[in-house]
Amino acid sequence: MQVIALIGSDSAAYALARYRDPQARLLLHVVPTGSVADAVRALPVLGFAGALVFGDEARREAAAACTRRSLDAEDLGAIDVVTVAGDATLGDHVGGRAVVDGLRSGGWEPNGARVVALGTAPGTRAVLRELVADGAAEATLVARDAPGAERALPMLPAGAHGRPMAVHDPALASVLERCDLLLRSEDLLAPDAALLGPHLTMVDLASDLAPALRTAGRDAGATTVVWSDVEAHRVASGLKAVVGGEVDVASLHEAFLSAP
Image 1 (cartoon, rainbow, N blue to C red):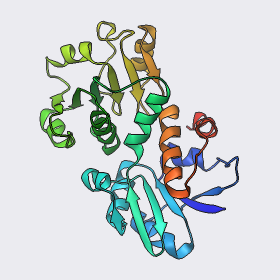
Image 2 (image 1 turned 90 degrees about the horizontal axis):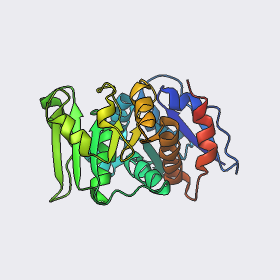
Image 3 (image 1 turned 180 degrees about the vertical axis):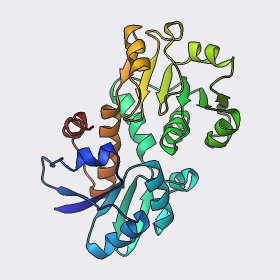
Image 4 (image 1 turned 60 degrees about the vertical axis):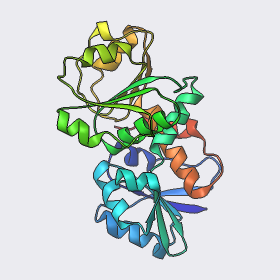
């Protein structure tokens, strides 16, 4: 059995503390609150196979502490999974790929899609970049102000159309009317039925979002993906990176349904 550390203190880490692997291949161990960097550096010494990291600040600190980082992690300045290889710690950010894989498993394809992301967290930027790499035609990142949106817009593949926008930009309404996928990590928009409908898929990337916009989207016929579904795919991808083989997403989803 391989032991994997849970580093961070958000609701996902608390939920996973109650998770039991159906195949008994791994044991998830919560790391006591303290220095994230010290916890990452201690992983090889204490015999951990790796770690899952939760929370934006913890993910930035963990990235700085890892011996090596993937290109995605370098670009985002954050990691969500650590793999131990001998004395080395290898940091990666798998959340973006995991969310896109989860959408595909539900029948949604990114090719040609117009995507709007609300929020500037590294995880949101990672999903946006992965969608464009997989064929999304247009990516708009919305922040509270224009400078914040410009700073947060990730580097996109050559030829991709990326657009930073402030939430109060009058052109945002027309962008929302035409978009196919709405990613939410911050509560930036009030519900507006005129902008929602059956054409839209809405994805919650954080656990503490107000439900009003999601409820309005569901009432208008939009497809909604809740945080527990997203986090189950993220964690399954992280565990797979550490231990190999497939990880049961359904059992993880059950754990997140009980998260505070």
